[in-house]
Amino acid sequence: MNAAYLSLGSNIGNRLEHLKQAVRLLHEHPAVKVKKVSSIYETEPLGLTEQAKFLNIAVELETSLGAVELLSACQSIENKLGRMRKIRWGPRTVDLDILLYNEQSIQTEDLIVPHLRMQERAFVLVPLVEINSEVKNPVTGSLYREEPAMEEEGVILWKPIQNAGEFLQQD
Ligand code: X6L
Ligand code: MG
Ligand code: MG
Image 1: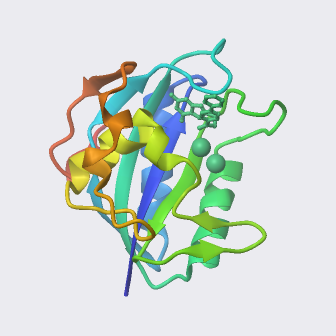
Image 2: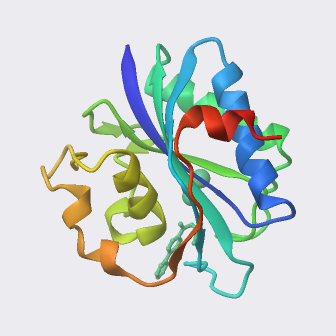
């Protein structure tokens, strides 16, 4: 069995509903179990800063899928939830990014793990460290909780989540 961490974000329409639907669809995949869901954070947009604020979460998965298969499962969820790719770094109904897969370093045409520049982004690190404070960059061995970007502003606790079940069950 494999362990994976994903980062999810939404900044269009009913952001919470989009995150919930994405986590539900992950959980309903026969080869994926959602083990942990972080609290929900409201975050200032990075990259393209003139767009709506995001809700961001991190999830921990157990899966029998390989990393590339997991990527395609994530992309099919993005497509189901109406993700359009018009503007680079632009607004999205939902984005699912693979942050970590076991403690592997993966470089294919379509997938780089650990996720590029994740250690520079508080909207990725804060939810990730909440669900596992011991998680390390598999390449450098650095603890993500010790990254300077953990201290950046623009990441506000929006709704605390106690466990994955709570997140999956709501309304
Ligand atoms: C300089 C240049 C500084 C580019 C930062 C950061 C670019 C992040 C892209 C950057 C730069 C990204 C989200 C987001 C995006 C999200 C929040 C990206 C890709 N996705 N902002 N911006 N949450 N808060 O999920 O991550 S676009
Ligand atoms: Mg992303
Ligand atoms: Mg993405």
